[in-house]
Length: 146
Image 1 (cartoon, one colour):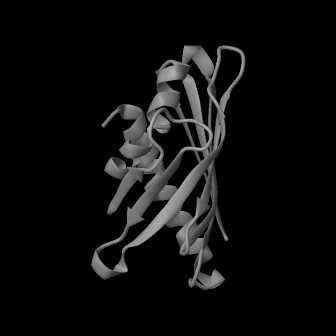
Image 2 (image 1 turned 90 degrees about the vertical axis):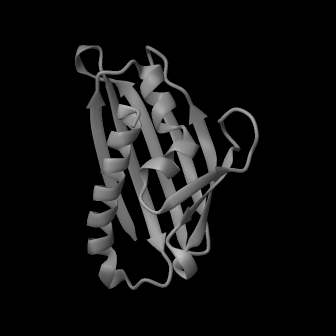
């Protein structure tokens, strides 16, 4: 099991920080060797299904996910989103939280609990560090709007 946490404070309003980290199609633009296809048409919310295709050539696999919690932020309450991973290779969950930060900024917290099937637990420490680094960079790019 791999668990990691990424936290960022940004000079963005709550709604904009929320919009940027929950734009699922953009995740495919900022995570290396990954494409994201949103399966559920319409607005994002609880019940939205999307699939990340990660890897290269014959080593690629699908990572289907579903949004199971969707509570956008308000000035009084943090926003919270939970995504359940339901693939054959990756299972687990990710939680995104956007809350007021110091000086009118927004605080973004990304927690993820991930199981990589077919990979022995011996490799969990390496996968944890790699995941924290990859998703830390992805969150940075999402928040910058890159």
